[in-house]
Image (cartoon, rainbow, N blue to C red; front, side):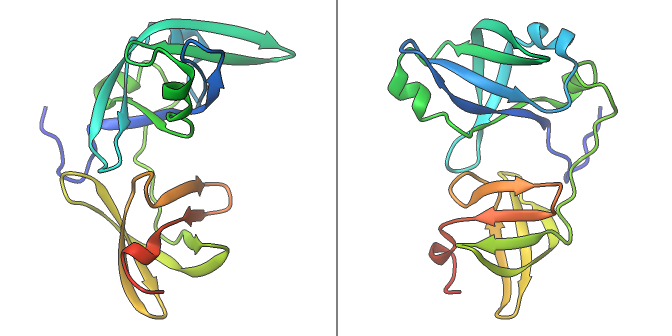
Length: 179
């Protein structure tokens, strides 16, 4: 299968919400995923601070029902204590694109952040005009009143992406350029 250079080999399927207990268990949220297929996931990928993907094998999985909403708890091989689990909070979870179709209820499309507003420390700084894949990670090209700014899509700079409002919340942008 030929892969377009701009298409990531991974698809985000959720994120870590918080640590649970003392043995490294994590509460996770899965986005638009078929609940019956979640138990079949044995490997997810996360990104380190540089934006590189690294594999994480699931060694345990359980579902808790509260009301109508299920909560998902996972245990990863390399996370054995509370402090390691706390470090994973808000980390995005990815699976391989070729495996993703069977887990999702709908067809997978690459997210587009074009025209999303970018907010840094409660100040709007501009809008995304392009998403660039440089091979190692994706970069947001942000058009602002002070010129263009390239921001890697990694936890070091991206706090939250709110798709409903079309807003990307950032931090540490002063390291990239003076605002």
